Length: 213
Image: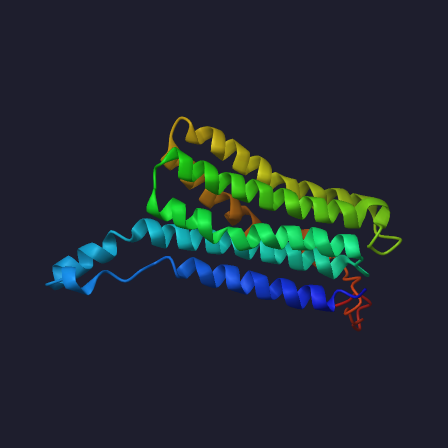
């Protein structure tokens, strides 16, 4: 099977998940506002929700980039990978719920743990999908270098490990835990050499330099 429909379906789920994040930010109730000062105060009180929105947007964006990178390296997919991909998307689509908890109950250990657990499970779901596809180059090009497989595997696993560390911090200081959650996706925004690996997917087109788009 080609990766085209997997890409299309996955992009749709990512788009919906990101859209659901902003729906948790509600406009202040009009009947309670009688002056500009009260309106400004009400908007300011929403800062935990804005913070949770931005943070979770970055998290989902990082997972989208990682998922895109994974799929462009696959030469084909099979039924097992399709369901592993669905498992990963199930986790991604769930992220708006713990993000809402984090924005509403900022500083609560329970909301921090639910959020962190969701991100750990999501990261591990991506790892399982990649592990299945890359083991023995099952869905990769036959000559895909082993060192590249190991580098990608380590990069995928770093995030869940960091989220687990942040969850442990929540037992001491829940608010510091939230800061650590926010720092993890920032480390994945910077380019790395895996972005330059030649695509092996069925939709890849060779360019003049011999690499692929």
